[in-house]
Image (cartoon, rainbow, N blue to C red; front, side):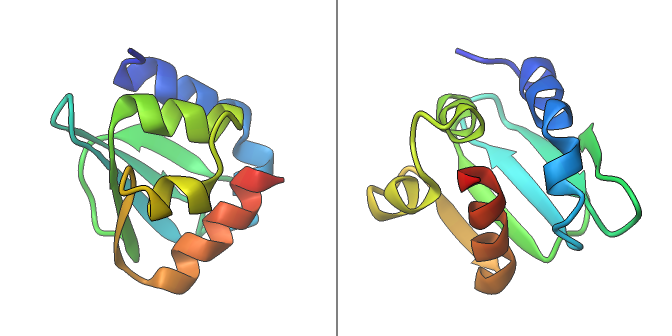
Amino acid sequence: MADTASLIEALQARADALSGLGHRIRFDLTDVKDSILLDATGATADISAGPGEAEAVLTLSTDTLDKLITGRIGPMMAFSTGRLRVEGSQGVALKLAGLLDG
């Protein structure tokens, strides 16, 4: 199982691609009761642990987020199988899905 710090590190490795998002997304990690905030509203993507306001909130396990980041599962597959729930802007979540698939 991945921990929050390693997931943040993995997201930071993809910060260049994620900086094109232009929105704030929070990942609520169900199994560790923690959150990761991705703020891509500036010139670069800022990724940090902890809660915060976001346009879309993705609720998933650390394992599912790890698989999404590494491309072992697609965002649409995670959503359709119930491993990923989306609250807030569906459009922002879809834009993120496109960046993760790429």
